[in-house]
Amino acid sequence: MNEFSLLFQFDGPESEIQERVAAQTRLLRQGRGLYERGGLRNWHEMGNTCHADVVDGDNLVASVAVRMQERTITGIGCTCAQGEAPRCVHACAVCFRLFYRNRYSSKLNGKIVIPCEVSEMVDRCGARRLGAWVYGEDAARETALGLEHLIGLDEEYRYQRWLDGTHFGEILGNCIPSVEEEIDMDTDHWPDPKAPDLTADLPHGWFTLLEAMYEKSHDFEKLARLYAIYIARGKLAEDARYVDRLRWMLSETGQDDEIDAFLKELLQEILNQLMARPRLSDGDDRHNNAYECLLREYGTHEAIRAYLDAVEQMGHKE
Ligand SMILES: [Zn+2]
Image: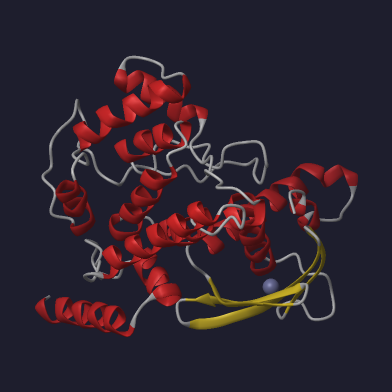
């Protein structure tokens, strides 16, 4: 699974190696983007084969089947490439999902897996903004407490305000804590099982710094609650990926009943919180891609109804 990028190499003369590598990189980037924006639907698995449909908006674009042996991909088929091995963005998106699931699922790994998404670059940003480097678990835990305080996440009602989008805008240094900052989509060396996933700036601003501290201190509970904020309030289409991240991190390990019961309860609590009210986006059309993705996977009838009503109501106002 880790080497699946090899499946998306292009053949051609030696003289065009640069072009071919560039084409492969482009394809991988597009495939990851497609997965992360929630472009895969109707995922199901039978035996060693998993199937998924690929959509663009509401239109079905292609259907992909991937066959696996253990954790190795042994065959790929896509309806866009009849009869030949597909080197398409659809198959690539499915491979990315398998790759991340393999990497982050607590269930598949038999222990709670804390994602390592935050990069060294975030460490550097953090050191610059906080004026010190943070080493070790204890320091990370303390720094996290400080950041929670600064951002306004240190009490349950303040956490709720972030989920609801009713927090106060307080300026820290020259920047207002928010869940939006630029994401670097120009990274060209994933999937790399050893490298952090986000070789990027701060996709969620100060929250990304906090995320780094939770990762370092292995605090899966707070990390999960942070992902919930990304799902409720994130501005990036790619925030849809946190639905999978939540599910995988809080999937049962099968090793310890007590921990597994806790994980299950935590997931349910977070889902209930998220679905307690519709989480519309602040953007123009009010659609929240990540939240819609959550509703497709976990939504109760009431929550889906409430969301659709809310979107429609906002449409009338404008
Ligand atoms: Zn295809």
